Each structure stands twice: as structure tokens, then as C-alpha cells.
Length: 514
Image (cartoon, rainbow, N blue to C red; front, side, top):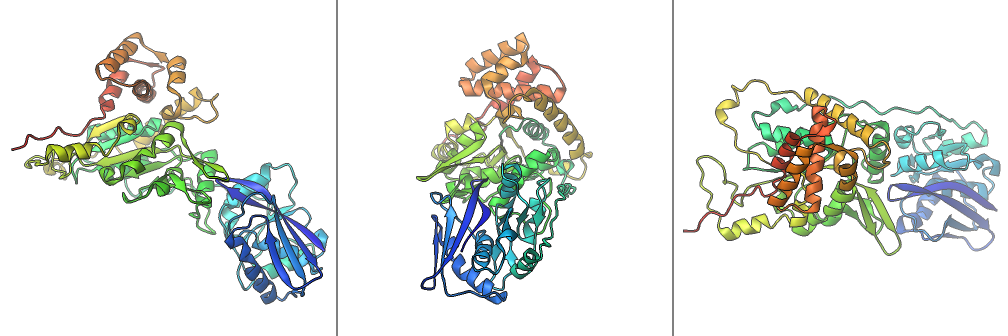
């Protein structure tokens, strides 16, 4: 007998329909799985067989053929265990064919018949909710219900075991819930921008980066507060909107980072990988591409500490996502697109010894050492860094005597207002919400620029030898500063402040030898 069960699989962060066809025919006992099944899918023969036996079902000595359609797309993961098991039960007349009509199913089976969580469920739920075929219910593991419930209007059923599911299907009493769930509100972060003493220029750069999504480079000696500042950037960012949060949860679900049974929160992601990471870990990759750190930081912050220790070829891989807000990973069989609109914050020492600029210390780095240190960041990457700021040492006498600094909540309110102005400005652009992500020519022609401001920008571009990209990126920063000030037009002082942060070469000159 032939049975057909609807399911889905994930490619990148998008899901596509998969039909699991199970044919049970006379012949020598044999299980065959076709349809470009990867090893984890082929191993489902053992998992499904043991689960059926331990759940009290009969496994007749028949020839069982499983086809995963479309057969020309490679299938990965363990989510096909449950639809295969349902197909076998229907094919062996242990479940009526009508019981699975209109159902979609996915889930991994334990050897005892338990239904276990899988990756990418939110992408599947979004696909089924907007698909053309009507779905009576999506049968999925209980641990995946919180993320699937973020998609409103999709009926869900989450039995604990295969035996429980079969019993409900036989009696036509499938437990279905169509109630959507909201994201959990972000908890108050234990850190606050008011913890930072001094560093007024760095705090201002942090605020501009948060308001416009601009890449920021902080250069300073060890212990000056670069990491402290970067970890407080999420505290001045507004909470995720619902569409942004769904995108973030979908990416983290595909990567297996969503905790089963826990309702995702609206907290913006903050990723701080170790400087020994590879290009594949940063950008994403693998035979079946998985998202990298730039995608896991989508709509959030990517902090790269010890920037000078990261291999140059790895850093240069940031150029495409910084420019386009996405990553395209090409393989022989397919090309996968991952979103990557993040705020980059880099931190590095001013020289190899880290003593340059520290009072009471003498930097003895040679000219060759400094040149090697400078070359860690290539010119094309440096040209994409909108903001660059020196983080000098703080006078230790001020640590206990300095008046309380401005709290994150006050800065976050200004950032939210600036971002609201940008959302209105870019309402007609589907993929752009922040100044850092818009095309320079579009912004140049669609925003008001004072005559003095344009003259200052053109003069500075000539004297500083800015590229066309550098010119437009300085304009983007100036537009963000104007948004923070609540001005409709970019004025001269906005451009002046943007150019102060545009000087990428913040590293010291080589000390004379001898």
C-alpha cells in the first residue's frame, strides 16, 4: 500500500515542501530510502524500526520503499523520522489513510518512540502558514512548540510519543492548538552604559553606531574599556520588532541555538567569537551551508576583540556582508543566502606591545612591527569602517570620584527616535531600515543636504583622499547624526563630526629606531 505524508526541509533559512512517500509491497524484507538522502536520513531506518517496535506496533516482513520528493534536492537532518513512521503505519494498515489527510509532520524519533526536537521548525511553520495548501495541523515535537507558535494561525499538535499520536489519529481526537504566542520581553541587562567612566568620544561613537547600524573600530591600549564599551552596545539598542525577531529566531533555530521548550525573547543578539575563528565560522559554510557569526548577529551586534590577531583573509570575508547586508554561500549544487545586517564593533591594540599612548610607558615597537600591525586590516576593509575612535587610558583617580554618567535608557530613547526617522525615510525600500544599509547614491539624492555641508564634505573628500565609498559612508554617518539631533537636513556640523570619526588610520606612527 502507498502512503503519502507532507513534511518540509530547510535550505539556508528558508523551508521547502517535501512529500514523504512510503510504499509497502510484497518481497524480501528490506528498507530503501531514496531521494538524495544524507547519512542522517538513511539512518532513520534503524530509528524508525526500533521506535515502532518499542511502541507496540507490528513490522511486517515486507519490502518498504521511502521516497523523499523532490528527489533532486539533498535532504539533511533527522526531522523525517516522524513522517516516515506515519507512512509505514498507514502502509501496513495500522492507521487509516484518512487519519493523515491534511497533516504535515516533522520530528526525530527516539528508540523508545519519543518525539524529539529538531532544527529549523520556525522556518517550516512560516512556510506552511503562507503556503497555498491548507494544513489541518502541523505535528511536531513539544520542545519546538514555543518557536512554531510564533507563527499565528497555524494549527499545531505536539504529542509526546509516537504511540500517543497514533492513538489520537485512530480515534480522530488529535489535540490541536491554534493559539499563537508572543515573544518574551527582554530582561533588563545587568550592565549599563553608566558603568563607563569618561570615554566621551567612544560613548558618542557607540551612540552613532547604534542609531545608524554603522561599523565601529575602537583602538586603545589593554584595559582602557574597549570590551566594556562593546558589551554595553546592546543596552542602547531598542527591542526587536516582530518581523526582526522572527528572522533572528529562524536563523538561530537553523543553527540549533534555540533552547527546546523555551519561548524566544526579543533580545537583540550579541556575538563575540574568539579571535581564532575560521572564515567558515565567521561567514558560514559546510557541505550543507549553516549560518556563521555574521548571520547569527543579524539585527544585533558582532564584536570582534583582538582584531589584530584575526587572520587577514578571515577579516576580508566581512567585506560582502558589510556592503550588502547578506552572505551568499555558493556550492556546486546550490547557492544559499543568509541575511547579515549587523552592527560590527572591532577592538584592537594600537601596537603589538599595546603600550602606545599609555602615560608612563614607552612603546618600543619597531617600524617593521608597526607596519605588520597596520597591515592586519586591509585597505578595502578599513574603507568600510564608518566610525573609528581612540580609547585612551582613564585616570585611575576618577574611577571612584567621577559623577554618574548617562544611563543606557536615556541613550536608548534617542537611538529609538533616530531609528524611527529612518524607518519612515526608507519605508519604500523593502530591505533597508538603517542609514548604514542604504545605497550611497540613493541617500545622496533623497535627503536634504545643506550647501555648506556638501561643500565641506567635498573638500574633505579631496584632502583626505576618500574613495567614492568613503564619501558616501561619511554622508551616511552625517545623516545618522542629523537624525539623532532631529534635523531634517544634513548640516555642516553633522558632516564635521562624521569626518572626525572617519579617519580610519588611528594607529600610531612608527617610533624611531635607535
